[in-house]
Length: 147
Image (tube, rainbow, N blue to C red; front, side):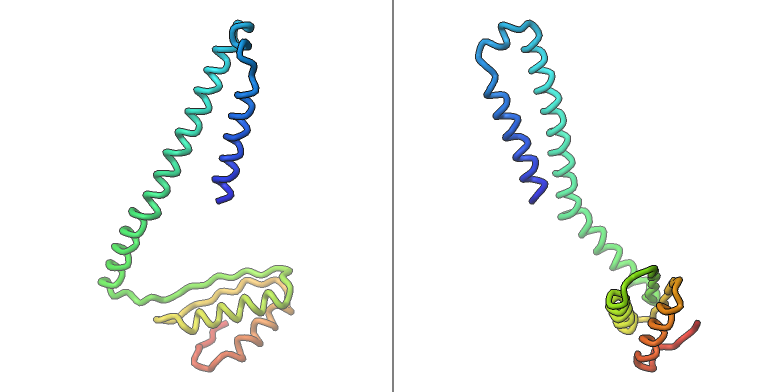
């Protein structure tokens, strides 16, 4: 929405500036008409590409991607491959409440994984490691642990 508003404001300013040009300006200045034509052509070319890319993106999001996603999910379901989840989390100098919220959500997601999960936690600080181990130890015992 902000994108559309900002471009609309840009176009409104351009239209306002063009309407402020006096009527006899182009005739009084030799190259003014050709300059305005070139600037108008470049502006039209630029926004034509923007419309083309926006249209392509909308088609992809609404038509192409859902079809590809459905085919990929169908092929995955037919293959019968276990859906093991892998998580990689890095924490460095993150405040404790954020770390707790992150790992709490991570452990809950891992516990819900259909065919198991592997969590790789990359930490630098020993305090973070102790905090994460304590949180993991507080989890239900059906989660196997390897260090």
